[in-house]
Length: 343
Image (tube, rainbow, N blue to C red; front, top):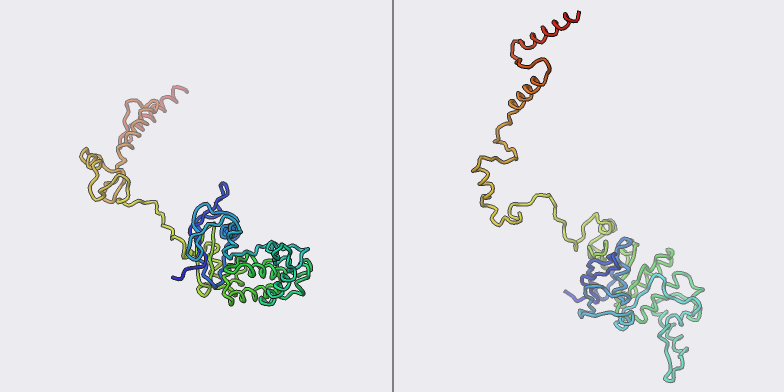
């Protein structure tokens, strides 16, 4: 198996009681465009911050070209050639294009004098190499369109990120024409051998420009596929959980019934239970009715109830009910005698 450029193994990250990452693993092949997709709250942004040194994972390991690394700050990631384009672009509107490209990376002469001419010339070369359409590198960013601003941010990342560029929702706020320009730029990066990781909710865009896709759900990586193995409907199912991912552990059906071999304390399930033997020896039967058990006899309790009722009835002491109705006639006579006495 080819060693990936960047790999994460079982990364976890919690914020107090909130678990943002619950064991994320992914592999980013070198020279390819990989998409990271998932619903809101799936942990995509937290994962990117861990991969770029903004935050440190609680547990897990990050490998760069097969070697474990520890990113304590974004500067550590930049030294490795990893640059990130965030959603807010991190551009200063009142600075020119070339000033934004070399922000905090200014070229200086040996005496500490800023090399303005060199930075302007190099900025023009970067724009031409990436085919970024801007009026002039001397123009302030405030006068640029949304697509041009996005292209400038990507160009800055590519200029300094020699190994990998991470883009967080690169076309979220762009129109159709500007989105097409950014996608063209991403394809150009792939042709140049630059590794790209894109975080996106636009699944149609993922299918158009990406080579691989990794799906996050509730802080876990649940699926990783080549883009040729999936389609839009399958991605939706993987994101929502309607379709199980190839990185998920299949759930075990819980029937609520334990097998005899797994009952705690029963090390020999095939041997008769001593308690059961004692019950059988004392004449006790199992409370659970079976097919061979005799039908319960309720005749005797019913007779007892009838006898108790007869004894509790006033004026019937010592009388017994028989089949020919003798007791009933006796009670009827007593009733007639009582009515005669009254009259």
